[in-house]
Image: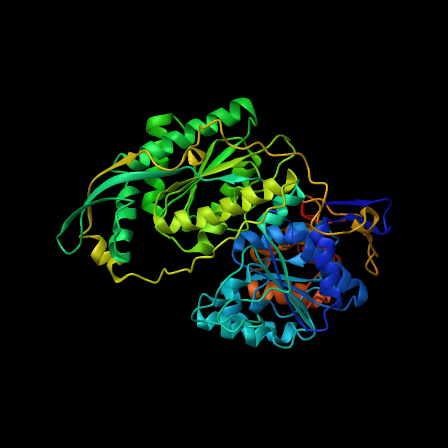
Amino acid sequence: TQATSRAPGAPTVLRLRAWQRAALDQFLASPRPDFLAVATPGAGKTTFALTAARTMLAQDPQTRLVVVAPTSHLKYQWADSAARFGIDLEPNWSSSDGGLPDEVDGIVTTYQQVATSAAALRKLCVDAFVVFDEVHHAGEDKAWGDAVTTAFERAGRRLALSGTPFRSDSSPIPFVHYSGGDEAVADFDYGYGPALVDGGVVRPVYFPRFDGYMEWSAPDGMVISATFDDPLDRQRANQRLRAALSPRGDWLPTVIGQAHEQLMRIRRDEQPRAGALAIAIDLEHARAIAELLRARHGVRATVALSDDPNASDRIAEFAAGDSPWIVAVRMVSEGVDIPRLRIGVFATTTTTELFFRQAVGRLVRLTPDGGSQRAFMFIPDDSRLRSWAEQIAQQRRHSLKRRAGDEDDDVIVHAEVDEVPDPADDSEQLSLFDVLSAVTLSSGPPEMTVFDAAFEDVPPAPTSPAFDIAEHDLLLELTPLPGRSMRPQTAGSTPRKEREALRDKNADVVAELVALTGKNHGQVNAELNRRSGVRSVAEAGRTQLRQRLEAAESWRREISGHRSPWRVS
């Protein structure tokens, strides 16, 4: 998807993918206030949503835009993406800020923030356009769902996005329609299979899987041994998976070693900056995997942990760099854009279909490098993971056949998500769990073996696209929003970042005036607001923030008769 601008103030010409154009037309034609779009990771959901938002803002410039994202990291990613569309979103909003600067089009918040700020958001969101990114998060906790209803029930339009179809077994998600059971009903669905058929959208992903022989001492005192082929109840199956993933056994080091070997092959022969992601069980497990990579392969892996305040910066640095490995728990499970990832190791005990598909979604984004760009997710041969992988593999095989001209249909049987909290998995029980040994065994048909030459080649681009849309209809002219130039903003010069810099300067001058006047911070801030006619720093736009700095400079001259280095011209 590309955006270009011929001159300041000229309409932006946006080239959409066929599915984005079809979804946009369907969204704009829908008479209902709620719309759910499900599109495979890597397909361009953000571009679709921001195109819809630009269209809504052009129709009514007074419309407030609110985006709800799963994580704080993604708030800034959304704000930066919106800036490229000429949309000014504030990701640093909090319920204590009061109103928003007049120059701002809206805010980006998180589901967790909504839970604590529903009343404040309710006031902001009358007739607003709300985008729910990965909307299934609203069903993670009943309190979150209730808060989403309170905050956004008075919005004018609500666009919900998801990377995969989802269920709501216990907490129905507000503003989502359901079938007779608990399956969410999408208004528009663009799956992984159709994206592969279209070509140039996502990568084909393959699933090398590894059997093993594990022996462990269970919390009840029993010593158990089993392979992944042995039938076990859910509790024992969870224990078996945990045993395989233990860094104390040989299974995990062997799988990491094979994944690393494949990564080095890709970096040597295809893509020098290719990267790999290991998804760990918890913080301790993530650190153990990073140490394993250092000790056995001489690799210093990036570790992204939720308790690290710099985790988002680490992810961004990894995405922009060329280091080979990143290890994370849940932070990279969805929404984080690292297109250079070609290898994944699914080394977590979370076995739900939704989480698995989110993890696989980290590998499907195409890069401009060209070639087939096949990706590989290394998985334990656990029956649940095998089921999810086989569904995706069937979509891949069927889609590649269709691209080659074979129109035979494959029937994909969708398994049910059966994971519920296991009392045997709590910390007290795990303290009684002990891994005795874990080794890999040969597993899977040749097609699932990572180094097998029989991987099918990706056929040429399709001749029959999934959507019958003329090429000229993929070009969309976006009318400039009133009162501003629509030249696309770069990440380094957005209005938001200018506001942040001006707020920092305002904080510096307040500290200096506190020292000069002997007044406290509250008194100095109140006086500066009075002198500049600003209600509060949080509600001030760039012009008002500059006026506030000028007022501070004037006040300083009254006191000392000298100019300050922080004066803004």
